[in-house]
Image (tube, rainbow, N blue to C red):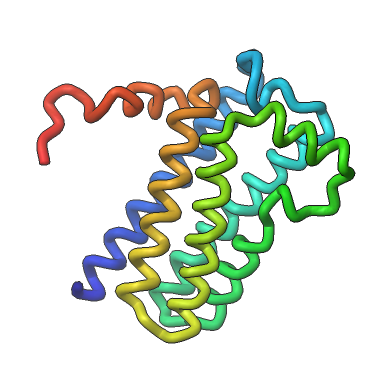
Length: 172
């Protein structure tokens, strides 16, 4: 695939992340739905929110690094995102138990998938494989969107409609 196509993809990702951040800012006061993340204790919700911000910042930093061929930064950022997994943070046994009991299994699966893909992005960047790195980056973005559409529609209401398929009039 041509470099210009990857740059367009990365620019589109930038726009998506900025839109997500704006939606988050507009809806942060929205009452949380019971269950899942909303059912977590305040310290765990705060840890998860901090991780989401860190992951968003990581995704945003990859775009200019990728476009400029800064493979070392892409690789390091991918590896940092792989390691940021909330379950691997310094949480108490009680907090880990809380996560496992209150978060839906599908949430945990998507989270694990995202962090796996981040590690694969790091590996692809280490090997200077732009197409493979772009593939893993796009899969990470798809995983973010799938998780937000399923578990964070109160923060990202535009994604709520995507759970049922493409918008009317959308054609492939």
